[in-house]
Length: 169
Image (cartoon, rainbow, N blue to C red):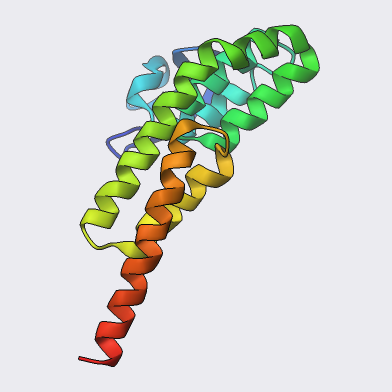
């Protein structure tokens, strides 16, 4: 099953995947059809689940998929692929972690922090706290995690003030 970003679901057999596409054989109105679909047209989690079964013994493939996962905020999947690559080729995985992944992680942490700040500004304190804690848990050594510690204090204060306002109008 392939899920597209527009909500369409396609049932079929995955014939092949590449780092940026999926080829699927499916039953269409004219019989069996083979279609090639770009990863960018699929829901990220759907592409990830299909592609992850295809790169099991390939460290570079796992790292490419880890990069895709980071770019699409699939943090647990990114970590899983990096660990899988590390078991296959530890030196390649380490070069990825300190090189390409460092920039991807920076982008992911900045997106998470910006999202938490937007939630805080919109007084969505529980959501802001959850986003901030995700950032601090998954990327504890990042620059953004340091900034998130300050934001979490502000969130906790705001929640406490809000509760006091509700108790003592």
